[in-house]
Amino acid sequence: MLSVQEKPRIQRAGRREWLGLAVLMLPVLLISVDNTVLSFAIPSLSRALAPSGTELLWIVDIYALVLAGLLVPMGALGDRIGRRKLLLVGSAGFGLVSAAAAFVPSAGALIGARALLGLFGAMLMPATLSLIRNIFTVPSQRRIAIAVWAAGFSGGAALGPIVGGVLLEHFWWGSVFLLSVPVLIPLLVFAPMLVPESRDPNPGPVDVWSLLLVMATMFPVVYGIKEIAVAGVGTQSLVPIAVGLVFGVLFVRRQLRRIHPMLDVRLFRNPTFSGSIGANLVSVFSLVGFIFFLSQHLQLVLEKSPQEAGLIMLPGLVLTIIAGLAVVRLVRHIRPGYVVAGGLLLNAVGYTIILAAGAEDGIAGLMIAFMVLGLGVGAAETISNDLILSSVPPTKAGAASAISETAYEVGAVLGTAVLGSILTAGYRNGVSLPEGLSAADAAAASETLGGAVEAAQRLPGDQAMALLESARHAFDSGVGTTSLIGVVLMLAAAAGAVVTLRRASVEH
Image 1 (cartoon, rainbow, N blue to C red):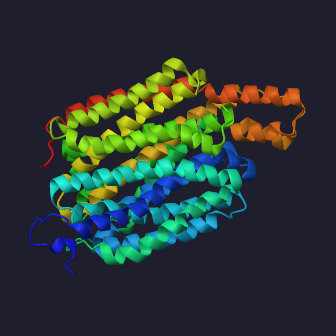
Image 2 (image 1 turned 180 degrees about the vertical axis):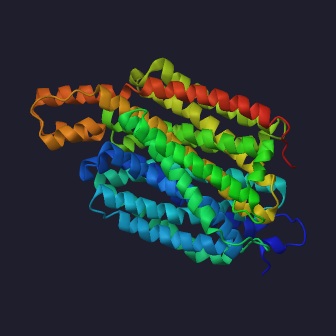
Image 3 (image 1 turned 60 degrees about the vertical axis):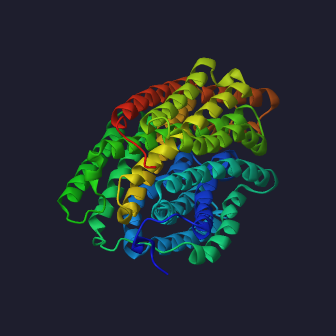
């Protein structure tokens, strides 16, 4: 069998290729389900493991942080040793660690397991998108395949709350991590048969120093952002951010000097490439930040069950899928830059609805806001990913895919770290604790809304109601600030997309 890069000419994909795409959707679903399910498991997890506010953010963030730091190196490794091979190794490791994560005894152990999931997840994501780039060489077919790929993310996000909600109502919080096992079995069986191997015929050498510099950039910056939420702006937050930026500069200089860079930063000189990367990042930032708030508000403030909360969010997630598929035809008539900018403007509208109405306006307002946001994310993500991949040769698809996925995961990290940290800071500053709490309950209730809900169960009726009312009001107190940040960021991103992507066009 010929490797994909060995095809002598562009050829239309047939039945085998489309079946291969179906197999490639399995790890995409695996990753997206894992992300969404964890958000819905936060209340149950908080009650069982009693994490501090910082530990809770790290449980959510560490996965995306490690993933973001390793995506570029793993993309380059896939180009070198074979993308399908890396996909299979990552899938097996991801499943094994997921099964172990279901039974960890402490918040610290869960953070460690999530870090390992980030390691193996980094092997999955660049491989799926780069294999699609090499399998579907006809532009119109590739665009549909990318739309299906993007819809897989949204589909997994939609499936996660429903399946996860059922599990959380009948089993312990760790059961959500076992969802990966039934997904892995068909992937490991059918991928060797249906997905052709592909690699870069002239890969560069492995660059350990660049790998270390990427991680040295990511960890301090996100840590600094978290410290701003915990202790405010000061030395303990600004110094790590500055250190991370210094390592970032060193990383860029190293890439510019190398004949075979791990990450070809010169690609960012192309406005279409850099503009699409930016659109990717801010779209995910808006989505993840919104879900972080919404999942907790529905369950802990409005007292909905995990399954009910998932059903409330389902329309918005379904619209993300529909929008991603619909824009494939739309860009035949409207310039892609305007489609991406329009999607980002819809994200701004979603946050504006929350800003104007407030979180306490009721379920209908939250649903409408999330539905509008879903339309925007689906449109912006599909077209920006297509523009990213179409701007590089097929042999460099792994590197381009890794950059795209890095933007995705950095957006996820920042969405939780920035918006989530603002919510956490607002909660800590606004919650009032009644007398009679034990030291442990007081510490837990002052850190997170989940801790307050758990502590209230051990208080007399009047005190419990007072604590819950104060905690819920404090949690929602940061919504106005986070929504305003979302609106401003999305408007700026839309303007940037119009400028950077104004000359971009799609292949037919």
